[in-house]
Length: 268
Image (tube, rainbow, N blue to C red; front, side, top):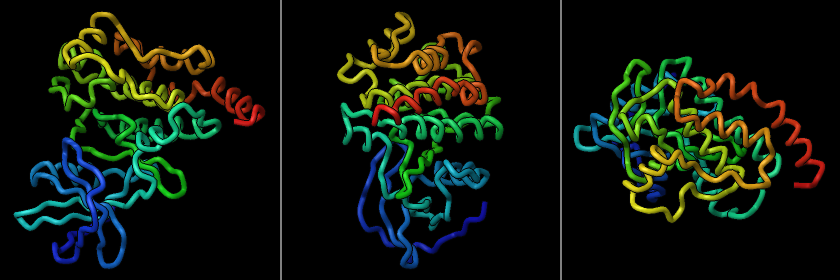
């Protein structure tokens, strides 16, 4: 994917829009174009640029360029004006997304299937890492913890990501080929409920125990259709070898399509 090296004086920071474990994101101007600029540690930034430069997909945030002046490193990305998917869900707590649930569930899954074909595990799939464009297109971002598929031993990431982490990583530091599938299930659950997974839960250590030893998962609400509930349960198998691939998940949409018709008919 084409991208350019950008002189630091050509990038003007406008305002900070997000702060995460892998950097600070700003709304910025690059030669009068509105962009997103992620300030990050130099080595981490070079690594993320290397990942992003290989990824050209309509549901992955587009790399435009980078600034590397030995003092600051910025990854310059397309600006997604709608903010993060988690921000959107927070603003619509308690509401039903209707047909948009189906559309965004599919959009959230497509980049994961693409990454698998590229031999990559994203490792930090969660609603804060999906951005929304003005056209309501989801864009997966933040590849700071992405790994090649042949990497099997990996350290856990930030505390805030624990609700999306699969048991094999929390318990055994194993990064499995279906690790992102587990997290995708949590994202689909968020899209259905608009809730935050394990909101108000105990300390990280207790939460990890509940996930790994008590096999606790986000509660599937009574109004969740069987097709969707079954998809969640399959994604959340403790044994990672029993989880479906994303291609299989994407083919498990007959029931979801039926539910989409019902949601349209009932006026959601």
